[in-house]
Image 1 (tube, rainbow over the protein chains, first blue to last red):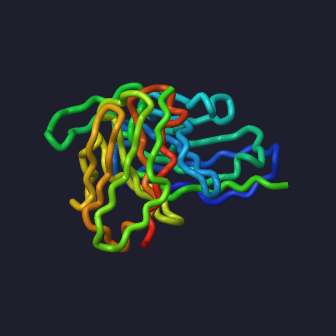
Image 2: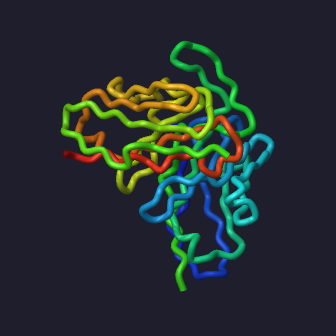
Length: 133
Length: 109
């Protein structure tokens, strides 16, 4: 069974650093992308960035470039999202999700997904990050 | 940069009725479009990818159609567990800043 298990909720002060985790199991961790998605309170989904644990290829949305760092340790099948200096506006739920590198459609045609720009077929349970003084 | 829009923002439907949700891209995304369902307090769940292929374990009452810039998610006969927010996502074009649509909330009429 494919599972992505995220670390627990965090309460931090502005300016503090934070690293949250996402552990994959039940599949080959190095053969799929892991993406991070932000959901601010009462709002929609925002694509933050993605990493391919097999070679650590990492892509960021322009909106999040320089604001966060995505990494992975394939030896323990775990991806990370970290901040060096949190702001109150970072208060949100953060989800990790698995991204396929290929798929077959309902007609049986093969589709290769390149550049890490993929959909997400399995999601973690989310990590709530609260930043408040 | 591609911007995704969804309509309506809220759809009020009675159980057993058909629900039709729309998703539009500001430029063509081919068939690289996914739909997700999110219930309160839960993570999103993949329903449809490749515009029309149901994900593993998704009931047949969910169907997706469209290509290019216009897409539709249809729920043929709404069940109580289908009341949720539905998001579309394009995965065709970079950058992904607005890859997800704003969502359509399906609530009980």
